[in-house]
Image (cartoon, rainbow, N blue to C red; front, side, top):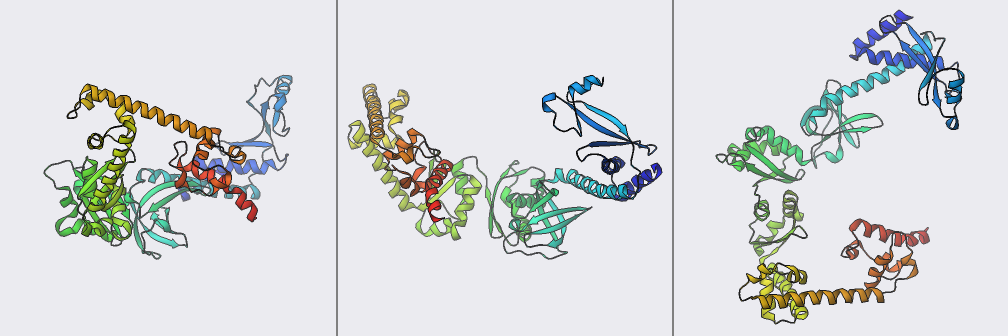
Length: 496
């Protein structure tokens, strides 16, 4: 029997290219499983094989537990039992007793075969994962082995398979069995079947890696790709920056007669790629990213991380693009929310916002339109800024002296105090209904705030949308959605 075990281990190890240790472990598990049949179902059995001679010994195990934790007689001994039997073991240790070993017969061999197959698969998967773990985020080649409704199974060679989900394919492209394919190794995903290699052809990083393959200057880090955005199969934008002033980054990526960018486009199923120049100035970057549309002006709102982009009326369609494609890609590339409008609309909007601020300052600071307009022109947009901006900044404004600045700051602070008192009064006068006050996820202060805005009952809240609530300081988008769904729960209960 000992020789049989050594022969099995040697044969399987050589055939499957799996370490002998893995096969020995599988045989030990199989022998333990066979020996366990002679004992209670919960008994714990361990088999130890001498890997030199093939001889093996079987042990039955008991865990040493506290008296109050004793629950499994088949594999537990109390600490008192350990003391009585002079075992010299503490809680958490294991007592082993040698028992008769099971012969390595037909049943044990069948069990061993099943365990070995499983162990071999696990070992092969582990080897694949180890081989590809450093290739995550890099393109790989393979051959389509199988086409299913949800994915493609791609043979990468050397017993490695990868999954390319259909939602990671470029739009309108199809592959058949045995087609050669190139894709990005997106991730190594663990699931119940073991580690899986997941591929993607529509991730922006795939396009970046294709440019790295086609443009030597990128591979040599003389040119950097600082951002990428894609509408897979249709259009994409990348932002490039040179680390060598002698190199034109756009020209290098385009290549002679467009050869380099065309090679990338062909791999991406004809996807059109715009190459724009990176700029550390966000406004200039947006101007570059909006290409081929020409931008007339940009207004930046740091608070909302957005920009108002103004273009000429005859340039508006090009700036927005088909189905908003150009502005959407530019927004994804730059990381800024972009609102595109005509120059005329931008001027009208700016004037409207300016008039609102002038009225705010006139009504709350008791000043004339000219002085309020001057404050707006200097960039003041709130009463808080006037009340608390350093005096030196306001003294730099033409015709502003210390007395005027002190008076404006004093009036702004008084106006803020009055507005706060009015808000408190509105809260006190608000009367939220009992069902709103006791609703899950609600607190008294928020209920008062909602009531001050006319949302006094759960029914009122149920009729709101997320956009209606996110302007309230105490509520973010996630909480707004949760509260609305809780308020609507009675609707669904009635329909059932």
